[in-house]
Image (tube, rainbow, N blue to C red):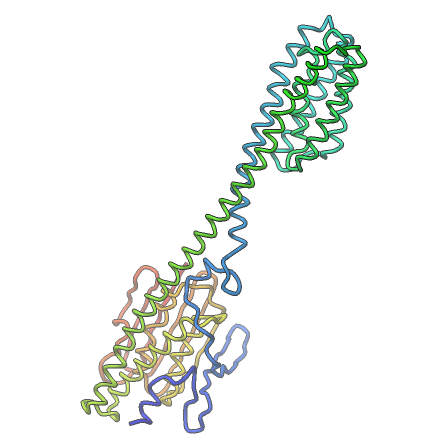
Length: 436
């Protein structure tokens, strides 16, 4: 009885079979390459629950790259909104406030043509800088900042003493916003340095025009503070909001990854428990009948039932192995159980199966466990695979007696996997097919 059970029930990870204890060999032929190779069974890899790859990275760590990409996407969206706000403020202030003031006071300006030309230059440069900023390829920051400082000094000189503290001297209220566009995404220290340079240019102009009275100096201080504080606040606030959004998004993405990992692990545990209960139930029934003396171990039907339970249990173990070709690995596990009973079996493979979910692999491979348990004489198992289709077929001699507990005779399927099972008195032929 022990010899029959050892031939039917699975040993440790493709354990030895036969009198010599040598591992059985499954022959695989690649007809496309015209070669035949033997596949000696190897030790099964440590099981890894299916579905965890979606939530884990290499080595079982959370998918850090996915978390970073999600955080970067949220931060980019937040930063883009702040960029749009800054561009709109700069161009709107330059067009709606500065230009009407220049045109209204044109006759009172010391050099109105220079002031207007400088306005046009800054408008064109600001528009180009804004477009490039929105596209993620901003203009060179410091050359642009240098150009704006040259315009700053030119307009202060061309505005004249009478328009020194008026809206016609548009660099007071507008230029700081273009500094923001020029240095967006850089450290705030650069913006503060530009504003200090702008203040020094203004101070030189104030002193140069002789506006050194206490009221003029107070007005100068108010202008510097009033025209610099809001651009700095927008610049710093935009960077802070983007950084906060990145941090919150990273935290949320990591939490979702951990939750997905936990759910996948729980689902894998339930699936394995259900499958193990189903398969071990069959094996327990056979073993209980043998233990009680209600079944004869020499009875071919009892041997077939034991081999069927062993094949299903072996395929369940192989299902969670981490191997390059899971479907072929599972089919070889079923073929190994059949060969250990002395059935010559040839496994022919053409092409490489694409990555398939466990449920699809299960539907493709499960019917052949029962058919191999019922096979006598010889068997030929063929796998033909392509990127969008996988076909598995089995041919064995037909013999008298009922069909094995495989698929019903004739065609059928469940929408994802189709199967065909026929017998004509000489051979039994079964096929399962998956199409993308």
